[in-house]
Image (spheres, rainbow, N blue to C red):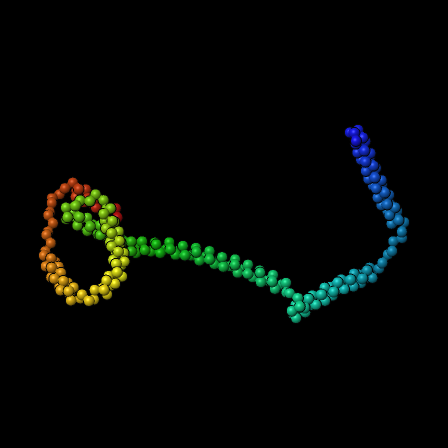
Length: 241
């Protein structure tokens, strides 16, 4: 098929479609005009207002009574278990959602009250126990500094003071771990109790001798630049706090 032949076929079909649509529009228009003429020519039936009102009331009463009968039938079927109760499911889902919302609201209120109580407690502790705790911590650091100076040690900072607490915690954990092993070894050494008792007595006597010896007094030194700076810093700290 050539291009010209295809174009002719398409044009002919399009003209036929447009002509068919025009014919249908004219037919609909003429039908509406005919119906309008028939309506205008027909005689209008007049009805009394009271009769019309009674007819309307009868229809409304019939409709309402029919709806009530349908509801009663459905309720009866639900009551005897022959039909599922849809309203109950909707009510339960609504109550569940409301309980979830209330629970979330209570959790939020409790969280806010808890945070507020923490802030109030911090303020109370700072007001009541803050000065006492500050004096206690200051006394611990001053005693440690004086002890270090008495041992001919002049620390530049408090790093060793904090490391001391860490070392004590590590030693306590190690002692807890060694307790089970010591209990096991004590069971194995029950047969050698006589020999260990004698050695323990000798060790105790040696320890008592060493404890009875008085420790040597630390050497006293005069004022130095480090001690002067330390005293100035302590005085400034006391003036500020």
